[in-house]
Image 1: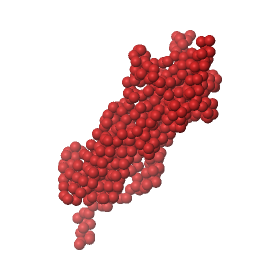
Image 2 (image 1 turned 45 degrees about the vertical axis):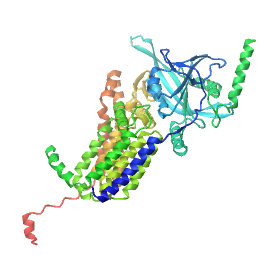
Image 3 (image 1 turned 30 degrees about the vertical axis):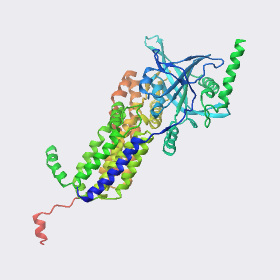
Image 4 (image 1 turned 120 degrees about the vertical axis):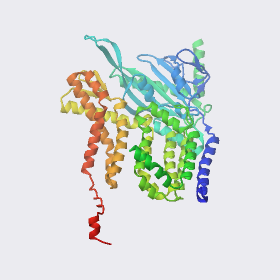
Length: 269
Length: 316
């Protein structure tokens, strides 16, 4: 290479090298999760402990029995190792309602496309819209969530011609995204805010994805939706930190513990 | 063709200036994306952008065309080799601005854990490096083939926002044609096609959304427009018609599925759905060629070679 070429090479290589050095040494500041995480073991479907803490989805909701659900071995294998989980099934009249939460750590791929889970379990997505959940605690606001209407063809036996007989089940899948100080129903908005905050503040916010799922017979979707929204208004404020509040600053969380203690005392009496 | 390549390639290589400079910058650019190319490890656990993209091509059938796009680009560059040799001059300093932009874009993409942003930066930076080394005229003549490299972008995982409405559109229109035009009693629930008794017949699955055909049609229309037309508005019209062509092709296939299912049974219809993907492309490419014929440009006649007779008529 001649002198001119050497000069060009030096400048271009310097640009590339600077980028490499910066990327090799850059460390992001990790934000706080927007959900309350408590010390409690979680197991997979084989009963093996997979996590020593979980998202504090409440286990004492009046009118509901509940069951802590396992996190599957496949999820543990596929998702980043610092992903946190929470999953409960609430049982009352009608079909159970599953409430799940996934909190990312240092890797945004903890929050995956929900369609993988929904379609992977045999549900067919028929429609997508945004719905609002009226929340009364800790203050009155409307929580926006994605609402997917799904269908599952359940095999119930054979018909008069000996062919498989199916009946349709309608599923409602609701989800939204929450960080320490942001709420959104839009995956695109969540990704944009995360990128913007990383570039402008150097902070990787620990976004979480909260979802609810239940099913019903065709024609019962509106009744089911109202049931799910009532349950969300009841349980979500206990584990979702309102935007702008730290865990210890959330007055409602302190109040809810007091209510729980009072109920425990009354039951013992 | 192979023997022509074996003869021409050494000649082209000897005539190309600043080879060493290009090789040094190219290898450094590759190294950046090999060792600091990806910063999110949940889907594919690798720091290399190339490995990430390659794994994605293996996992996502809708993205696997990305493997052949670089070969298409190299082929087009080879076809234009004489023109490029004439254009290859000296260093063009303004191209450094584009290279700096590409470096900044990759840095941002790495920080926000978006490997697709880094892939975009890689293509832009590669284009910028050729401009730094061989000049502005080279960049002007290689814009089209280098732009094709953007079709390497893996989009399948993020395509729901486009493919879901397309699936619904294809389903609704196909059902409407069958119902209203042909009197076949079917209706749709989302992208599921049901018979008159509400039993599911077919599901217009994501693979039928046209994403694969949309990307393939985009690539084909892009190449066709640049190779066949000179006027910018005609090229643009052909390119943007890729979407409606792909949708039309899928509507034709799903409508055929419904008709065959009505005539010969559900299993026959399902067989058509899985085996006749080429019908989609046949209709789409046919439409593209039809529009191309309507927009055809008159080719300027090539100058006749001088013959001994014509030279005698005009002695110098």
